[in-house]
Length: 315
Image (cartoon, rainbow, N blue to C red; front, side):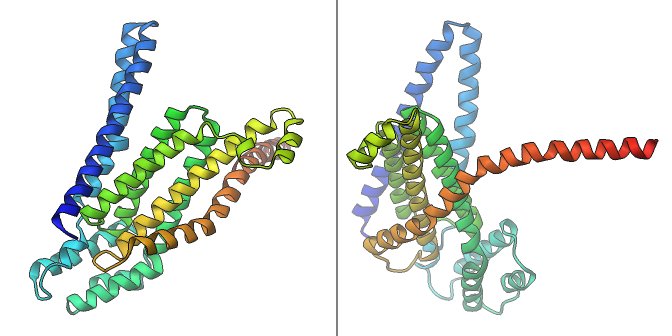
């Protein structure tokens, strides 16, 4: 990749972050001005809370991502470079610390003769354990996005939620892998995340009439409250699908960093995998609340039974 292309990607990433920051600040000031009508102290307290949330939700994940080592640096060094070996060692140590690995795989990351053997061992651990755990991270964050954007009916809140959750997801994937994508790929991811957040804001105006045929939409319209509910669920599913796509692209950047991969192949594979994973997200999300309700009503009889047993034993 040429220096001009990299510079352009960095410019796009910085521009996206700056624009997002401006939108965030304007939203915070707007809410703060409303709270001023209640009390000036309430407004100040809100600003302090907003700064803390911004640090932990946006700044801290970015710092963690940037501090992680990059394998793209190692691929540009000589094969016998001492620095290259140290980068792979750092990645192995990070994976060992931040993953629940079986003893056999821990040994692969600690017992090796040379750099080439360590690289092969890393690939084995990636394929066996790390990839599975990354997919779990993607599904968990996709569920969060689906629920939050389906429940909340604020376009601006949807955008902020999708941006922060996607950023958190990338940070978690980087921590699991033990290294970050190259700066060029990070710039692409930043643009993807910002674009996804903007789409989430636009989806708030999505109506069920835009998704289903007119005859079906008219039939549903006869049932009270059903159309707004289905519209909200549709928005949540769409945002969840975009989140899965971001997660898969991040994983592919990490697993194939340093190799020649085309933008088109990543898009196709990410789209194919996201369609496979979205049914799991929908099923787990839609069954979450019924399970909670079942637990709520099944605990009481158990507690009453325990009390009865204590009373009987006391007699």
